[in-house]
Amino acid sequence: MEAVIEFFEIFINSTDVFFRGLWITLRLSVVSLLIALVIGLFFAMLKISNVKALERIADMYIWIVRGTPLIVQIFILFYGLTDVFLISMFWAAAIALAFHSGAYIAEIIRGAIQSVDMGQTEAARSLGMTQSLAMRRIILPQAFRRAVPSLGNQFIIGIKDSSLASFIGIQELFGVANSLGSNSFNYMPYFLSVAVYYLLIVLILTFCVNRLEKKLAVSD
Amino acid sequence: MSEAKEMIRVEKLNKSFGDLHVLKDIDLKVNESDVVVLIGASGSGKSTLLRCLNFLEIKNSGNIIIEGEQIEKETHNLNKVRERVGMVFQHFNLFPHKTVLENVIEAPVQVKKMRQSEAEEIGKELLNKVGLGDKNNEYPSKLSGGQKQRVAIARALAMNPDVMLFDEPTSALDPELVGEVLATMKELGEEGMTMVVVTHEMGFAREVGDWVVYMHDGKIVETGKPSDIFDNPKEERTQAFLNSVLH
Image 1 (cartoon, chains in turn green, yellow):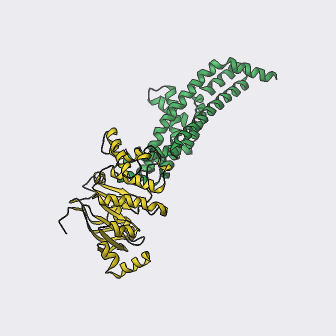
Image 2: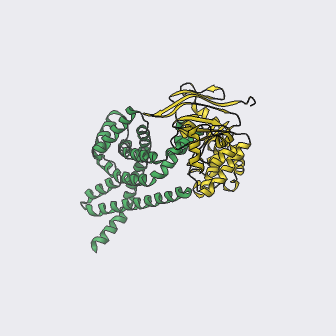
Image 3: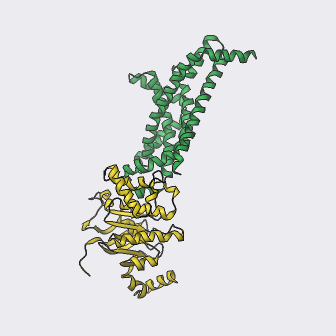
């Protein structure tokens, strides 16, 4: 019982510090996932380009991301980027996380695009639309709808993965928990607190994705 | 026959898919306001011929001349050509994420850069014309097959094409819905639209067609007025085909 009370005390007393970490986690996640969407869309386009060389480039990228641990990618990109460019820790971490998520998002988008019936492209082209206009106006909106559940899932993974940025010194949620733990030599309440924060974030995001799915289903 | 304006001319058209020779030396002429109906068994090349006319399939050899202009993919912007050649598909291919009216105005606004309000006016008019004036804001999923196909016709008409191609427009419909689509097409033909129609509806071919073209095995076997083809087919294979579908 005492331990439970102690945990709640620590949880409540540490909210202001954790909120700073939460803010960084949210910013890091949103920024990296937006970049990842752009990267994902780009490599999805390469994959469906029907140009062998471009497909190879996309395959290579996806192979590298899937074939190495995220923490390794973060370290390589972080030290690589900060060595070469004048770039903040935050942006280096965001780019590293985006580089990682981008590969999975590319595969999600490619699958969704290819699941749209060929007849849609033909109908669009028969009306005089160019390939890119048909893609933008007709194919991608339908593909995006189909991709929403998988993208939501990937976003959840991305938010949780952002905790690895603490290893390069970013004071996001997990970094905060680690610091507070090491200051007090009492880790467990802070680790439990950080778990609660992640659970809440994921709960809210899941709710939003479900809402979006319902909203996009009006035309079904 | 009076000197009508030539809309489409096809000369020695050949098309293969890999080893499969689908169209063999096709010659075809379609004058303005003609309704040309292509009939023949499945796999005879009717649909492929139609798709070549809209450049959804690219020919291997031969000439396709549209309104006096020989169209080649190397020298012509096919998108511009397609603006003049409307197409209606067997499976409608309406855009499911857009309402009925949005389907119709999409190309005028995006391709022709027509003002939204102007496109909507034209779109509503066209939907009225095909008998769906009350469905403007419905999504395609709420419509019957026959209604979907009429929207597809309105969508193609919204680009104000010079020719309309119909690729088995009633083959995916329940029998009781075929009539409403054929009636819309008949009306269109009577208004003077140039049409090339691939269909298995022999009643439509006879009643609405100006010319009937019988295809077999990638070749045009016989072309004639509907009365000639249906009542006095010259070729044995035409007779056999008509016997099999009419009896």
